[in-house]
Image 1 (cartoon, rainbow over the protein chains, first blue to last red):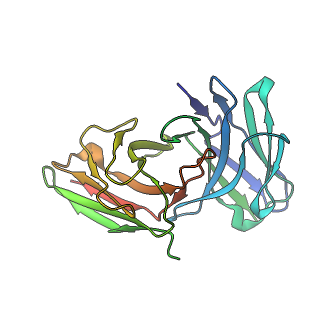
Image 2: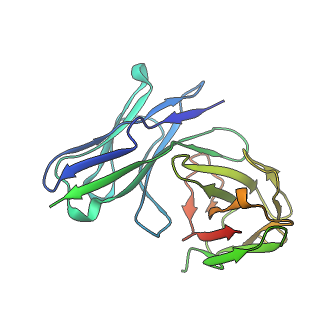
Length: 114
Length: 113
């Protein structure tokens, strides 16, 4: 069965500083990987996704993520954080099987200090 | 396009009451999903559907039922609500292609007293 671990429950970062969110997955084959963001009181919005090919993936809002098969990781990064990046971030792995189901990590809440 | 919409946005139930949550999508997606979100646990899949008239169990299906009578709608029912079902419920839809990207609704906050 697939699983996702986000080791950091909360992260506090100063505005303008860099941000890295960790994601480790368990899946028996090459995974589909996603990062979603949830602003307070909102639904989830897709930031970026990895299916195959280039292991460095660019997303919206200046985010990028790198797939490292040897480490079973898909960490999310942003070079310079803005106050509007305060949100909860979810990593997810997708099954290449019937239903195209997603398995989510527990989430990382990001607080941005002025 | 409205995308994925959910009705209602908030609801308070007493233990043992029943209710139905409605999800509607206007993107002509084949696949639809119901999740619940609880603190520290991310989103967990309750039930899903791969097409009109089909439903299947997800990770946490107990206490819930679903129906997909029309392609654009996916209903989640609680027949006898319990306090353990207090949660935020999200509906999502996807095109059913290989890359399984899902589009989410705004959520329904349910409290069971």
